[in-house]
Length: 223
Length: 296
Ligand SMILES: Nc1ncnc2c1ncn2[C@@H]1O[C@H](COP(=O)(O)OP(=O)(O)OP(=O)(O)O)[C@@H](O)[C@H]1O
Ligand SMILES: [Mg+2]
Image (cartoon, rainbow over all chains, first blue to last red; front, top):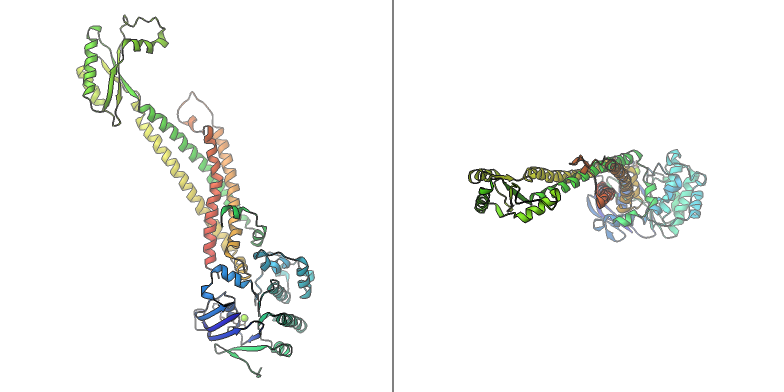
């Protein structure tokens, strides 16, 4: 689905990521860890083409990112649900409209029952008319997850999706993601939460990637 | 994206971008003010165009030489004038108007029984000039020398500089229209850029959730085009009302009362609102695509 070959990235200072090679096979489940500031968010941004690698090659759905037009990139993003670390909502629109946004911009019909189910599932059923700035951090993260999955994407990239959640809600979100993975979705979760990773490993064959010294490595049992 | 497609309502795209009340209102106001000015520039250039046309056709006409002499010398002087005209550069043809024709000319004034023969009437020589025209001062001097009773009446010649001025005025009016269109485009580009900059975070989010450029551009283009259309429509109507209410004092003649639209000319200002919309469409589209180029 998403392939990195020898990707490097720097924001203009020193190189932040080097020689990153990664293959998100269909139906795979990955965690991405690493110290704060190591480049987890950057790597995810490379994966949904918000950033372009300074060298190396990123392939989205079997097509080289460099060969994609702007519209192609938009189409690729419709197949990738992203939970952004900072959520990225439109603050002037109510939560429900925000969650529906991927469908709206794709001119796809929206089923109000689906929306209600989804919002209820993430525990936001009563907040659908609230504006994003009125929500708590955890509520925003749950809404972000709802928005990421409403398009029924092939790939889900989640950046610290449980950062502001209590353990129960974290488990609930994890269960949802595991469930989606069983339905065939490709999942990548960036997180610091080792407990979450351990919990997931009990349920699904998840691989853990770690950014260390600018390189991406497969973490072993030494979690 | 073509014009009809964009005109089709796209409420979603419109709602997704927050209302840009102030910039949009400024756009409507600028478009209205510019349309108002454009109507007057249009009226000016059309009126001066009419004057230029009228005056130049009058110019293309003829001049007359009036010969007053004692009847004994009359024929000699007429012959002298005709001979002189034949050797004058810039004269295409010349002929003496005979008695019967002269009587016909005078009839409306004095009735059919006028005894032309017995009256000491001046004889007239009608001349037509070539495209290059003749030197009227030189001709006058030669006439004075060779036919003292002859007077050149080139009554239409004084209009020549006026006709030139009217043509120039028409050109200036058209130039003003072009400048007004350019200024409208510039102002709408500025307003659109301001709205785009203010909405950059919104645009970024839309791109992130998979919006194509066309979708985002449409939301802005639609908004600014409709505002420009509305503003220019109002401005045009007000200005047309102003032109229609100009006093129609025909006997005062001249230029000022001619400063209206005539007949189907009244339809011409009606192209201004669509034109303003087109300018807004192009300007906003250009600004929006340029902004999007900087985003992934
Ligand atoms: N737009 C930017 N311009 C310059 N430097 C940036 C930019 N975004 C991030 N960085 C830098 O790149 C490094 C990696 O940032 P990134 O957000 O990828 O880290 P992270 O691993 O997601 O951290 P965290 O766990 O805190 O979310 C940081 O040192 C950050 O300061
Ligand atoms: Mg991060």
